[in-house]
Image (cartoon, rainbow, N blue to C red; front, side, top):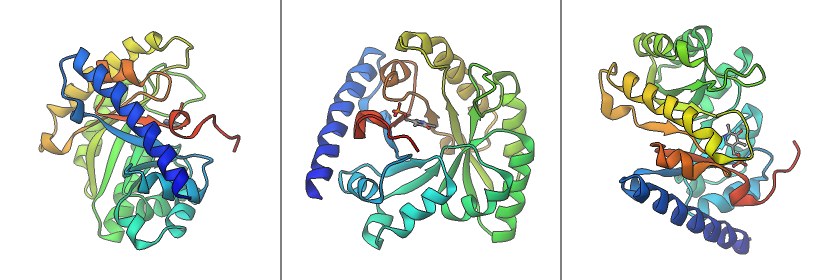
Length: 239
Ligand SMILES: *Cc1c(COP(=O)(O)O)cnc(C)c1O
């Protein structure tokens, strides 16, 4: 078991070395970028080992799996992790997601935003949320189109019970990581525009972009959070 944590820690450190180099290339501080483990299809043991390896941000795509990860962990692990929802959220799972995840990173439309706000109000909590932007406007992906992101941000900023903390985006898949660069630029531009609308800009901190194959380009373009799966765990298992 500790071998697994040691393996994940070694991979994490290799990723951080590449993050640091990319940050320096663009004149940024290496510690301005955090790493989130994308744990879809990974086992409870892998999630626990990830937390022991010192990765606290855990991103899960499915509500039920996220609940299972939490239930499989003791207090020591739970205190050291922050579970984010990064998948597509169905309306009928919104309440469960809201009460179990520390943040919902994939708010992609006014209906979901209003629903989450109402549920947060009912539960008497304030929940961190991020907007997901569909950078390539692909039908098969979630997210608000870039041209509608600012309007959605204004709406979320007006909702009680929700704290807007950032943006997440995934460019269309391409073998060449450079193909993502213009999309990362678009998201970074949206990020600074929306930050200027925020009443408390210090709370708007997550520019979540970049995955295993393109995180260095994303960091060069300003990412403050990269979401890494296969580079931490090996090739993806089918779900
Ligand atoms: C799977 C996934 C990732 C990580 O993908 P890798 O290519 O395995 O690093 C990041 N973000 C989201 C939303 C994902 O679903």
